[in-house]
Every structure is written in C-alpha cells, then in structure tokens.
Length: 123
Image (cartoon, rainbow, N blue to C red; front, side):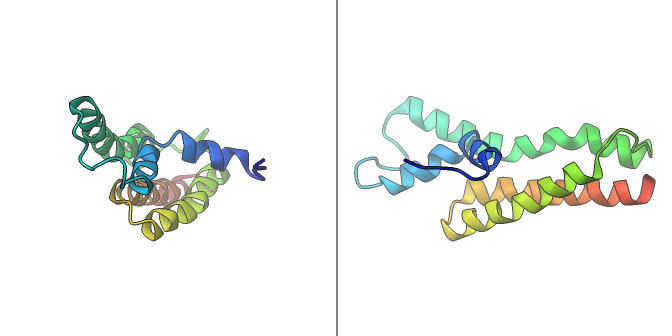
C-alpha cells in the first residue's frame, strides 16, 4: 500500500502526458521502442508534441502580465509553488534520462520564472 504525503504532486506526475513513456522504458525488454504498433507510435509522437506545447498554455498569462502590465488577480504564491515543485520533477526527468519529461519540465520552469519576474515587476 502506497501512501502519498503530497497527493497533488502524485497527481501532477500521473497526469503528465509523458509519464507513460518512462513506464515503457522500464519494460523495454518486452516492448521495443519505437513500438512496432503504428497506433502506439502515433501516441508516442503525440506525447512528444504535447510535451512541447503544454507549457505554452501559459502564454495568455505571460501576455497579460508582460504586455498589458496587469498582474491583478495573479497569485505570486501559487506561481512560486509551481516553480518550486517543478524543480524535483525536472530532477526526476534528468535522473531517469527521459527527454520528453526533461523538455516539458524545463519549459515549465522557464515559464514559471517568466511569470514570477513579471509579477514582481508589475504588482
């Protein structure tokens, strides 16, 4: 029985679009990569794209803060916690040598830093 002290971190990892890739690598003796099944290869490619696009979903927030110079209603603490929780996730990706996770968490780290700097300047 596993007990998670921080369920929100566990949920972030479980809903991470690249999470399945790491699990597949652990079972590489039974499942070749790239997979011979075309549908799974398509899914793998889709996850690669999502790993890059997912952090870009914060662009409207960055635009609001940096271009419109409006930081009202944006919680500094929330974005700071996002940044701090991303550091161990990026470390996890580096340790496990998962390129998709490294890309995604590095982009999220940069995104959070951009938002936080904007919050400091314009709040």
